[in-house]
Image 1 (cartoon, rainbow, N blue to C red):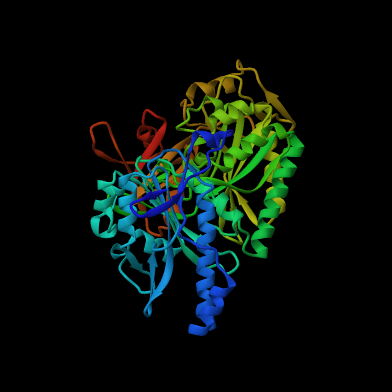
Image 2: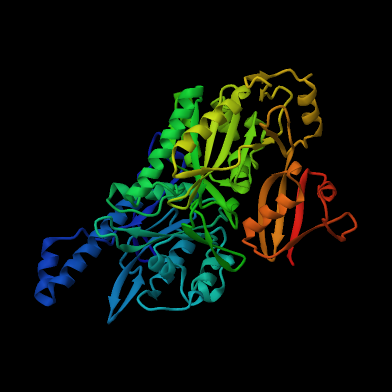
Length: 544
């Protein structure tokens, strides 16, 4: 098919499978397979290095064209084009001339944008201020993806084709670096433009990455776990020990599944409201400007009915302070929920997967590796919530055996929305442990009556129960969040704040009351006044 001087190959539409409901690409046919004669001719004209480079470039272009023919998209108004590095004189530039491209529908707008692209080239071998670079140049030089839900988020000088893109009704944008695994070098950039203002490019990134892999090319994967790549022997030993801890705890208490979470690394860049910012690897706008967590190796699945939940977790990001694992990370402590299926999807994106796999009770605890200075959250699902503290004791014992780790605070466990049948361990005067399930027990009833519905805690101290609250402390422009048992008093609270902000001088804590006045906390009794209706404490820290 000819369209504005382009020769496009008609796609083959599948007759079965999910792909038949999606849009394939009309792919350009102006790339020839590399031939040995091409290399020989180049040697006669120039150096052998030039010949090998030319042969390699043509080979990459042919692989990209083969990839484009295998891609399917959620809408028709889509353009995908490859930008290849090429020496022009002494400088290396990205160009899309004679490089493969594909369109979902061969209309005037997409062909016009493609034509305009062929008149652009971007310098990638010199240093420039970041705002003077195009997205394509940044992606090639950094080796990291860049994307936005709407091209109008870019400043005009940062996106030379912005006016053309808007005129052609293109909004969603994604640029992926393509690597040759044999050399580790970036061999070009795959650019994707669509008419929709997509909130999530996860499907496209995953699909493209899978097809590149078939042709021995790679690109950053969506939802790359932060610990999937083991860089050294020490890190491998660290992860092996965590796996051993998960396995022992699950086997000892018949737990269906346990997972490890880490803060997601900055693995891409996104443009939002004219600002270019680092982002995690989710390619989802719900993660913008947020600290997210993703699952990492290791995990342990004892009940294979929970295997689908593990797979879903690998494709999900949790916002810090959300869900059980997020709360454990933000407090650097521990958290328990008797039934995670009560969460809404905003609070816990895996809620539907938990329901399908019949997973309810969940305990999460913060874990710090002293040697590698790495932070984790261990996430355990229980078949019986009554045995949570027995499980915690086993966990503490196994972590203590290893000098490599420090476990987050488990003396005061934050409990999220505990129902009436939650049970806790108690130790009587003889030292023996028992299980309390009778809600008529005076001590048990008293703690439940006084616990706020969203931030409760239980503490294992003989027959005593204490309440911990969520504390948010602001110092200068920094914020720390953690749980703190009120029974410990103001002095210990100040010590905790000083430790977290690394303060050596004396400090004062204040809170804002209902009249918007700043009130100094002078004694333990004032802590109760600082509590707000939600059961949390919002404080301001001042030195001196």
